[in-house]
Length: 200
Image (cartoon, rainbow, N blue to C red; front, top):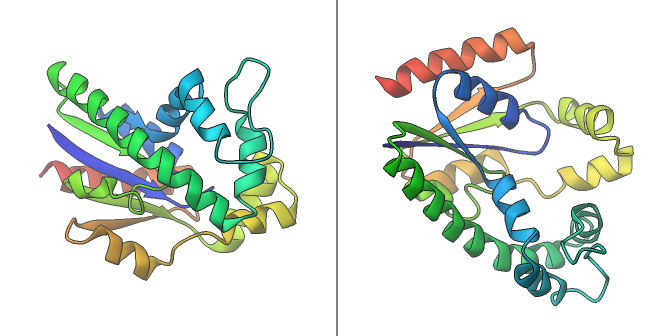
């Protein structure tokens, strides 16, 4: 089984690339869904809640992602504190899911994660695709597609590592850029070229 790491900053189009890969037969393992699974677990939600003075759980005892996001994206130290708890838990759950996919006969699994590089998940990939776009495109997408104000959107964009940092974090795994500033057809053509190269 081959593992393709799929990452990129917020609003760059990772999910669009994942859908294109799924259409080509790749199994998709979405780290965001793994986080959701963890946040829905009462025991793990208690561990997250214990990190902060502000309430971050809903009436069902699960993590309220919107409330938590508003808390951590405006405070780098709180974000780091959360990541120190979440990253290892996601890594363990991801390994469990990968074993299940391999047992089921999956040939290619695309592991989609915003923090694939920062969390060390890229080390187990055969190669990494990083979806990127121009900052002004990111800003517009955050405001139009996610309903954020300009100040909220800019706050989200402040915590992004540079391309140079991404390259350093990826080593020695090969890293390829997927530029997503244009149309869906242009993105699909790029993905098709890289998919052919990856399988070869």
